[in-house]
Image (cartoon, rainbow, N blue to C red):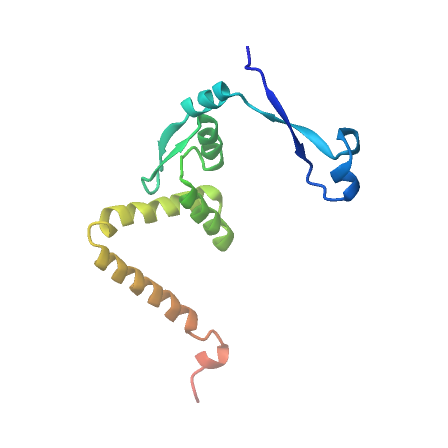
Length: 150
């Protein structure tokens, strides 16, 4: 049996004077359902700790949320930060979500094995990669620049 619900009266999002001063029939006030304390305790009891399969960070989540994340990211649990990185990878490179998850997981694995042990070397390697990318982008692709003088 579900616990009894408490009701209180709250305002609707509308800000028109008629809506603010009218009763429930006019859309002014509407009942807001708030769960009893027992229902809140049950929801808190369902919280479990989930460890990100990419970076290893742990978050407290409900099993329903964990299922939704796993459905979205090819059966893998990824934290909020890694999920944003995967979304950005999908948008920037136009790859599929599964490929983006794999790419991000390899970056995280590399960082966790090397970057945490030698942070200065990891930063130097990252700067080297960044300079390589910027150098390749700055080269001209014009056919005129590639033609030999003659």
